[in-house]
Image (cartoon, rainbow, N blue to C red):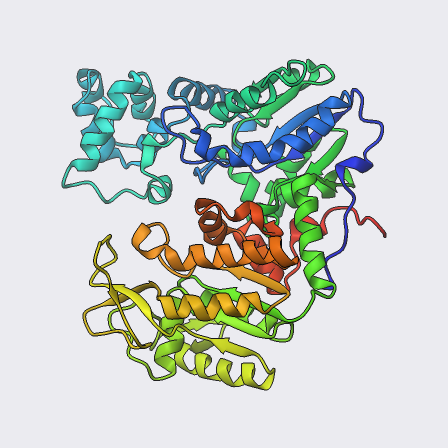
Length: 530
């Protein structure tokens, strides 16, 4: 990890007073239900507050940019040239509070649109409209009440003929019923900033992130402005560099300084905000979240105390093989859990019943060549042995006939899983073995749960790993890092997240770091010591 360097931070910005500070944050709290963010889902908003506070307490003006979910988005270059389209899309999003009913309708084909409108209160008007694009069907649908839109689309989804439309949002969420606007985030942010402990903070909201010049110009020192969802524009993650740069230039025009505090998206090279804005502005520094992440992984990279254990779980060997191979030179023990363990167990000759595995499959490596999973697993055992790394696999399992809750799971006495059963968590013998290994190490890194921890029956393994890391940290100074994603969720759920050295806010980003990859969103920022 020699490529990772300490970066300048928001503390290095001076003067701050009356300056516009553009802050890339990760306020992705999706899905948001009924325009309200539950207190159990506002952790990312809370985490962003120290950086925001640093800016506004010194009289700076914090302009926040973030994404929410994965909306399809529109091209800025198209909307910029058409005031009519801008007006229409803005009106639709404002009227629908971002739930996307009209977006859903717009992606349907002409026959489907006609069918939906035939059930509506404007069915007579719709009769005269052609099935061809541009006939006015979407505009007519957008004129309906939100309640009727939702009712029509629910009927359409339940209709047997439904299924021919390509609707990307529907694959990621439950379609139009999930809100992707950041307006509720602005409300929750205002509540958190105005908790009574400080002078009142005015939190503004801009309905269009690329048409906010007037509201930016009206800001006063100490105020906060949250821009609408970046991904309402497809340019944010466009593969076309010119489109990303056009969006970056517009956003950069709002600010005097740029602060990056969205570690969870720092591994994305095709990002107008993470990479484009610092390139356009010629500078960029870390917020407190990003700084904490960089320093935590630097502590690991620059001589983590030995012995070191890596705990790796999750579903697929193919997803983690780069991590496994890269860290062999840096660790003394490797604990393998989760569904990926069953691929290794099968390669070692054990019976795995109906457990999820990749045995017999292949995947394309970074060179485009096909790799056989079984052969890969066997080679990995040999490579680990040559590196003097002890590989620990499950000795027993918590099993059931399906991935469903049960009060009477089968607990095996050996690594073999009976036919008709699937392993869904590590068993008590394995927990004892794994926690003992952690207790004998000075550094522990965890990426990937041990089982289906979302179901209480199969949560003990993951929770035990979190507890062992927390105990080691608190009792003997274990350097403990949890690599975000599902591992962080498990540690948070069982109450041990606050007891470890560091819990990463980005699963994909932390995985890339551990694999030895350069993160474009961090590399784009100014080095602390050039």
